[in-house]
Length: 371
Picture 1 (cartoon, rainbow, N blue to C red):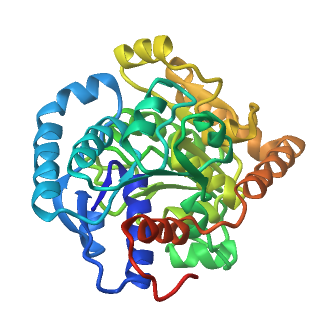
Picture 2: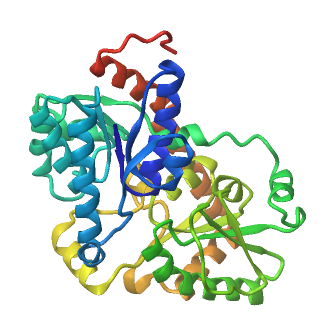
Picture 3: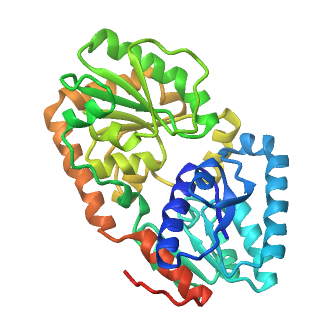
């Protein structure tokens, strides 16, 4: 059983399920997720909430409770050999507690951001799960002395970066003008992120159109995401091809999330932005203890890419930073040089393969393949 929360967690669950099926073709996989996991052949027993923020979470409590109830019923009725949890901490730790009572082993894949807030969860995680697979090397330090088996497996997003075509070739595939440069604007994958960020990015797109008309403006979205508003003709929306869109970009404005890491691995200079409700932001200021919000800066432990948060996340500031990236050659090259260090830090580990092996080890399966 796999329990995943939002878009990136589902992607990791999909990649993991493919590796499990490769190693154990007769494995039955079911879990918590959404249409992407279902399309992969994973039997859905409950829908994930795909939410972020304190205020937003309150609005979805009823839905989360229904999903949790169904997940618990599935644990009881199906008695899986192993429960694999992917991030989604509040929901998944409660689910781990139920699994532990039933004697079902638990593998936690993707640690909650204990390095940012609620470090007390470390003890809770250690008491409920059998092993944890970590995506970032520095996370190992936070679990020292807990007795929990930990392993740095690498980041699964590395597996999705396999672009060998030229920018011109990628633009043709995406039905863009191969001769004109591209700027990508990523509003996020969650509905609440898109509602909050899209108006800002439309203004950015207008500034690009007026002041830098040679550029094509692209908004990449997941296949499941829909925009109700009719956008201007100079904005190209592309679904399900975020990696390709980023790979042919000269610069990108990205809502903080996994996409920043994807852009870094592709060597795309970026500006990172984010907005939440006033109440969520006020609570976060009190509870969260972190110097940076983008994974790029967190991993590099310094302010490499510009972060524009809350009041600073304006179309004027985002556009100004994009212009700086495009027009200041020294600044651009320095950014690209720093981004190359991300791949060195994460290495070439194949996270999905290793976590699939860990799944089999904990569940007691016999693999016909170990590579």
